[in-house]
Image 1: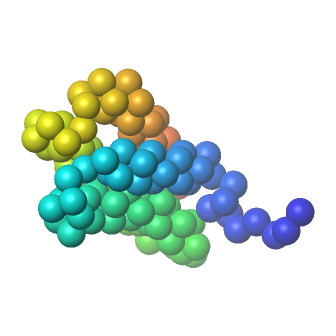
Image 2 (image 1 turned 135 degrees about the horizontal axis):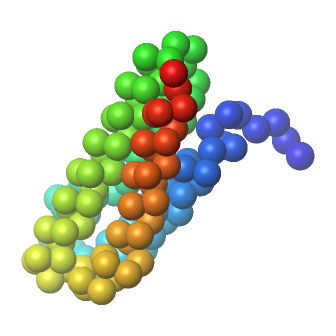
Length: 120
């Protein structure tokens, strides 16, 4: 097996990759006129969750690590807000958000909290 960086071993990073895939799949069905608006913003937020986890894991100082994990959490909340708005606008089925995507977001949120707490 090839060398793995520390972030690749984190379950929260793995889940955030899965969330990004889910987000890409559901936003494929959004209206074309939203491709450079809401879809782009949603996808960037999802990517940012995983990216900040990986960047934080590469930092030497605990304060820096926590900063990036906090940024990841912020991106996660931004993503949830955008998905709720998408549901309000009729672009995303409420059941899809409630049953498929939101549980992943809640799991990532909990794991980010635990990751931050473990960095003392």
